[in-house]
Amino acid sequence: MGKVYLTGAGPGDIELLTVKALRVVKEADVIIYDRLANPDILAEAKDGCEFVYVGKEDSHHTLPQEEINEVIYQAALKYENVVRLKGGDPFVFGRGGEEGIYLYERDIKFEFIPGVTSAIAVPEYAGIPVTHRGITVSFRVVTGHESSGKDHSQIPWENYKSDDTIIFLMGLHRLKRIATKLMEIGKPKDYPIAVISRGTRPDEKTVVGTLENIYEKAKDLPTPALIVVGEVVKLREQLNWFEK
Ligand code: SAH
Image 1 (cartoon, rainbow, N blue to C red):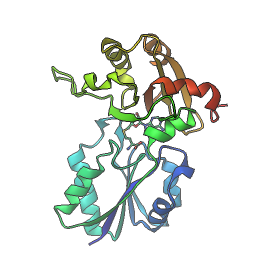
Image 2: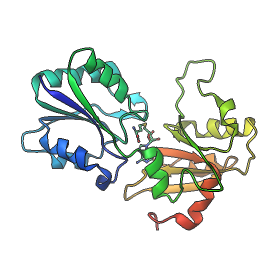
Image 3: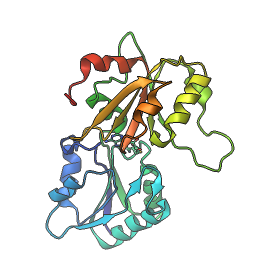
Image 4: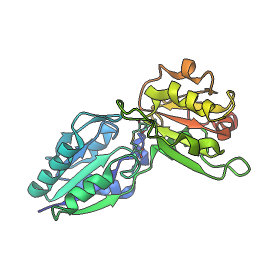
């Protein structure tokens, strides 16, 4: 029976892969990977390593999570070194916990390898610090995705009245609703917001706007994309370095 490495692949730029992740990728007998994990990482694997794609587009799963869990489990019965490679960090909306519990219940050994999460690194490449002295003392990372068919919002909007930086993952298709909700709970309509598309990759693109106009400006950006809300967005004027 093998061991499973539940491994963060970082946000896109292959150089943001950790040294530890690179080591297990090089030793892997099989790599089970997501759409958000940079496929160039697979080139680091040894000859004969098997690749299994269980891609996810935002939260629209190509394979249901239960089936992904089973694919990982079956791989662990067959191979010694199993790498489950996930975009960003396994625990930040990565369902790494669910995969770990599935393995725990079946007596499979596993390790988590943290990854650089897009929630912080993507704003960083866009020149937007998630905290900044004198501007904000905290940040929140929130899912922008709400299951359709629910008649009430799962997102506790009333909690977002404070001036924390808010980072929405999986939210581009809900951009209009997110901006509208934030104005409804009292944020000014000229409050700063940015959408960052394909962050840390060569084709990264950031669009900055206000709660009132961001939807029109950013709705057609390609995914993956995340949304940053807060006064820190203005620091991009001085800190933008990557897209220059
Ligand atoms: N575990 C991942 C997040 C998974 S949720 C992490 O820690 O980064 C998937 C969401 O992450 C996407 O819908 C998008 O909002 C965001 N995301 C991931 N990679 C991104 C990138 N390179 N640029 C912009 N957003 C990204």
